[in-house]
Image 1 (cartoon, one colour):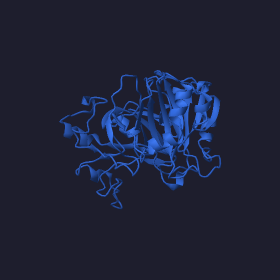
Image 2 (cartoon, rainbow, N blue to C red):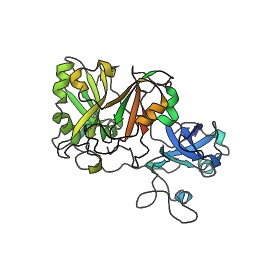
Image 3 (cartoon, rainbow, N blue to C red):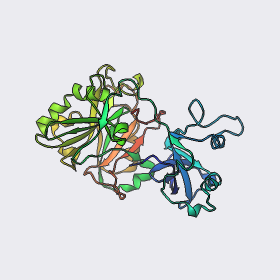
Image 4 (cartoon, one colour):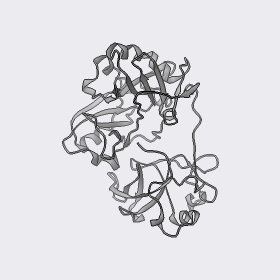
Length: 353
């Protein structure tokens, strides 16, 4: 799971699937799109700042078009890093010149940098946390549990697709452009609800009739379904709540009555494969678009097309999420789930929470 930080990383270069002039560059857990003319090679030390990084004044001019004077940075002060799609692949941040970094840190050579260490504070870089949209916030409290609890993220297929073995049985579900709900149903009947953003900070959201996550959970009768299908068990359910990204991504749902679609279950601390999910919960699952042997070309084609959530193909599909049919971790130990985004999707896939 990618952790937000500004750090020195060793580059790993992959071919860009849609361009002969660009490469994909893995830096830590993040993906960059880089021009081949930059000459990056696998093993090079790169200092990387991810999306939402707020740069100090002396660094901002480095990200201005020399011909037009227009900043590549966003925000009222043109001080913030934003992800950008280049020929269909997401570039999740920026590189920072070693000529800037080394003097700031009192170093003489890139080999003196500690790979993976967070340099944000030393470089005067902070993280921008956007204000929560109406209906997403509420009273929060510290998430204090005595049972196993997980967080969820999906990584970029372009730099992690090699995690899958040719012919491995995989599942491809539609990637819904909403907001992640992270819910835990205790064996004692207690319910804990939070969002991706709040979970990362260690908070849960107190029940509130105005909160989008609680409303979606109640609208879909999820507590009752979990109690009926998994009695006496602890169930952690991950779901995408919608509509949460504006009217263009409604999936046919009324904005006054948010709904959810499940995409991951952890029962008594163990991942539950989709084919073992009780039928009543499977009816709430994100649309399954493919189940079979891993084949990259087939999966890339599936990332395109119309949404299947509403059953009416109301708008384009954001993309797909590919997971092993039998859940397993990646080589580095994180939950293996990769996203392939449609080349027609032009927006940001950041969660509003």
